[in-house]
Amino acid sequence: MLHAFSGFALGAIGLSILGLVNKSESVPVSLSPAFVAIFTFCFAVALGVLWEIFEFAADSIAGLNMQKHTPESGEMLVGRMALADTMKDLLMDSLGAFVISVIGCISVKRKAGWLDRMQIKKK
Image (cartoon, rainbow, N blue to C red; front, top):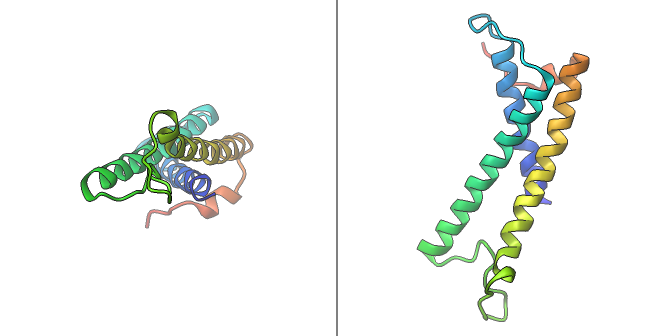
């Protein structure tokens, strides 16, 4: 659940960044709905991957168990079982990113004003 929300929230941040660029007077550009969806998805998933790299580094350097490679029984997981937590996290990140990407694409296509109220604004 946390990773799905994370993908959704990071995608919303990506949408806000695109909103700033799309409405900037110094950069006269009008982004297509497909580009908005692809950028939003890729932005959110890339940050989710960076988080998984952080988890791996923390597990390796500090001896933590952020990637759940050692269950409560104390026996380290190997092979496919060791990858299960990371893959579930990335899949949930992707699902949340996909949902906000579709919402962003539809919003840009229909020129819905509700997305503008939620975006980061430049003063």
